[in-house]
Length: 137
Image (cartoon, rainbow, N blue to C red; front, top):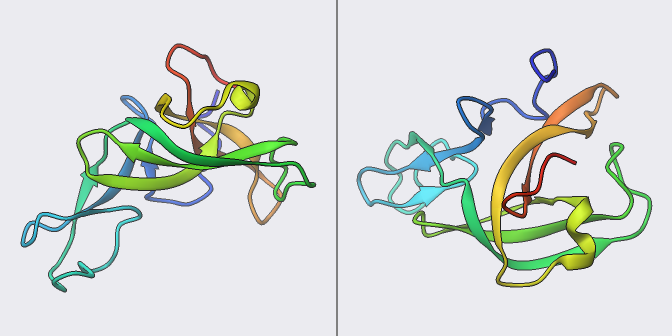
């Protein structure tokens, strides 16, 4: 179903074998980053691709109730998620279906689905975080 739909931004996530964010890892100082920088902002050494944990804890969030950009659902939610084992906090969309039940400290899992459109108005894949056990939006 999603094989012909392009990601909103190339190189930020992988869809198979299971959804994962692609960040950067600096072997010189051990820091991880998302998105992947060209060089480590800490030590300026080259950075390698790193698959990040798909599991995390919701650190903070907000629900946006004004007309959304790029065909996102209305309302939509965004938040910061602390990824398990990566010592990294990432920003992303949250499953719009879980808005009534959002709570700081909830365990969430990464997923990828066609959500909204890109700048050219074409349907695109985006990463988002959902509650474990909850299906696609």
